[in-house]
Length: 233
Image (tube, rainbow, N blue to C red; front, top):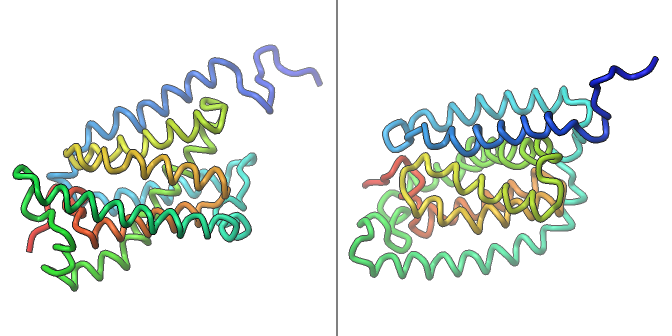
């Protein structure tokens, strides 16, 4: 049977289909974060992430052209693990320097002090370090890495384009916390996590890296910028 006159080839989408997905990407990861204010609605963050992640998981599982091995891919994870650990050590030291510098600035909130959060509230800090990777990091990685790389692979056709725009998208969605440091801190993190996912083809790999840096953010004193605008007590 001959193909329909306006049917798109299965290996490459029609220009209009690619354009629609580009618009969709801009609306989801560019416009939507501006409309959400987690500074006043922080309690909605985790339920929202979990619900979205469940929906994304169902979408990926029902997509005929999605490689399900990318959800785990232990081979890619093991291959990239040494680099992930080395990068984390270097990044962790850099973040200590960032917090130390911020602590010296008169305009910095009093909650942003080196290792201030775990010293002020060790129980809450421990709970966050355990639950954050499960209920925040992995849902984010499903949405911002696995889904993004799969859904928009024909929009951003080269690895460099995909990593660049995915990194920017990751940083920009943090505008929901309504403070510039949250976005700025996530720019290098976004590029790094995107690169790790591209290299490893493993959500577990980028998720581990994200969790390690995320927990360190809370530990070193930067969690203030990622918790509805404040961490007190």
